[in-house]
Length: 364
Image 1 (cartoon, rainbow, N blue to C red):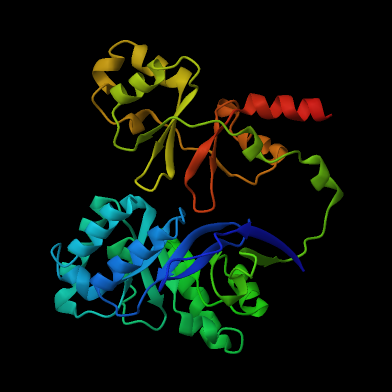
Image 2: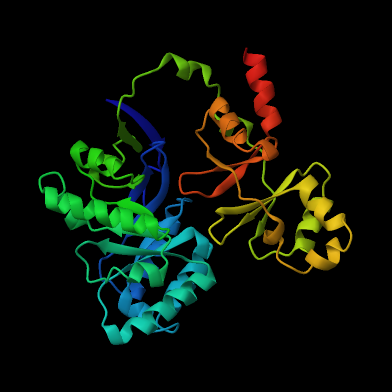
């Protein structure tokens, strides 16, 4: 069994347990879950945030958030916001995981509170799927960034086919409503194999915790090496260029300004609040539309997305040849920039097809 490793800081803050969240495709640690004194209130949550900040860990943090605190309104969450300010972190670096039950009468207040947290910039997660007192249709109303399966459900997966089927169904449901899925409590390779079979990429648990050296060892299946794989070339990450991004709501005038700031800019990527690419503006086609007769009058004050093409995304681990195949699927957009995304679909940058062609030609 092969393994990949990722370094973590050897020490954590006192009274705060730090657990890595691992991307199973790459073996990288992409976030950390911080658990404090287990009191389950906003004051203890704020203390956990400050403790994790003192550990100088810069990865995004996942923190458990009681549903009753969200229902209590903005005043009840004030200690959390203050702890965030003191810690020097930004809201988008914190994923708040909703836990605990609520009544039907409290549902509207809960959704309103989650919308408020999202407006501030926090990422929202829903936890304990499968055993928690959370109705499944909350996944549609809450629109979480992350859905976390129940640790109790995961513990019974290897030896209980019915619960394994339930967990797989929940994972599929969460993905179909737009959430990333996290499988917690992974203690053995049988669980890991099941999780991979469900298409879940994010996991955590004793099997994936740091050893004495601070390294996280991620067991990966040994894949048969095909002769053709050696000819696929380096990964697109090696050709990464910074992307010029604008929010999805940006106007065509905003995009004109972005292109005008630097003549070497070949594309502008429209991203959502999670930095996920939602559209791509090719320099030549976009400026031609704007420069045409009545082009500015028709489009200038309107959303730039009206003139955007779909973003052609490739994971950062994609080989050069495979990326060129993606580029060649649309004959009219062969030379459009490809958008490189990370483990959770966020825009990392762009790759120019011409760079890939030069690399492959040189290698041969």
